[in-house]
Image 1 (cartoon, rainbow, N blue to C red):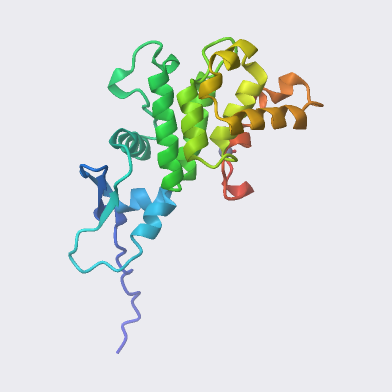
Image 2 (spheres, helix red, strand yellow):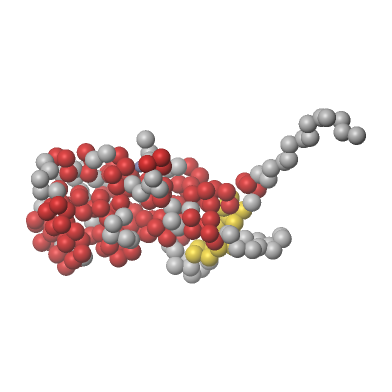
Length: 224
Ligand SMILES: [Zn+2]
């Protein structure tokens, strides 16, 4: 006979217990990361762990081509929400050297591979925070990495195009002519033609709306 009492709620599995082992680079550097943290943010990991895993089997994902330093930046960002591009090398002015921009480029490549929009957007915000007219501009290695490794329509490539289109001087292009991808120059020309009716001030990347260079699923996914 039923007592009529409400049965206890089914206990839900706590996802933070589950972990994934990620082996990074040729040397297979081992990272143990909470499955829930990875899969909430990265489509790549969500798809990677969908396969059938045997009971008690360790879930392992290999990122053979990845840079360990980029994965460290990614994991730190996942857990803290903060980007530490320079890491231990962080000193006054570190955002002005080419190593910083190389790290940003490699991290952007990681974000694209892992299909993590929020991470890619955070890198765009990071660049926007350091790019200032009259200051140093992103160095050629970042443009080369972006144009070699990322979709040219992504937010970071569009940001670079707009920044150079608005601020870079002819002398800079002449000095670095042999390091600048032809497609990048074409995109700069196309941006200048497409937006030539706009006031220059409205074309400044810092004056665009916040999500202009972000990638979002739809309007409800936008930052604000
Ligand atoms: Zn946004």
